[in-house]
Length: 250
Image (tube, rainbow, N blue to C red):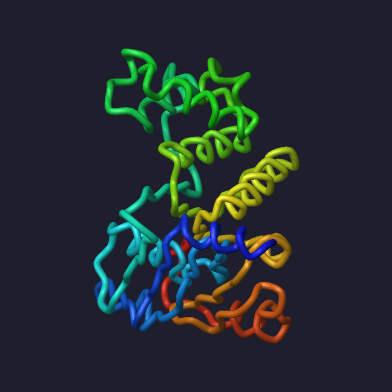
């Protein structure tokens, strides 16, 4: 990457700083004085066991959960757009909702039953094309495979065009073609200088695709380059400590 490309990359997405961020629900400590920084334009992965607080941390970033400590975003200019891709989509599969209906409901203020507005139609078509779902835009959401639904979720995270993307295990339901789509998107986001905060369980993908990785299990256990952070010793420590609550990732 040339110096000019690096400057362009660092100007588009924001820097993020977590400074002693804590979260307690009842008597359970979910996050314990979390401190680390996400560089602008970087692909930054969060790894750790279920229940270790990864999803809770991104919910604090999105303003969905209360917290103590400081959390700040430094935008390169005016405040930009934050895109979010959840881990899964819960909906009634019997609903007669097509892919286009879903995209319209997620991306425009106009009621989805009135159809796509001209303002969003082109952007929705482009987003579906990027994830390889344009030819299935008229198909019912309930008829899609899990991997296809995950691609649609990736598409909705692209509208409007974000400068910060928050991804909660986007690869979890993807098949091999979907993984290839996701990896192409990551490469596009890196070239565009978009900041990406990415929860992921596939440690091989993290080492291959991320710039930096933070190991989180209630507290930060490591924060380092993805090429050097994922040592067997560190991963054993990260995944051997049992979180205090059971069930899914907090």
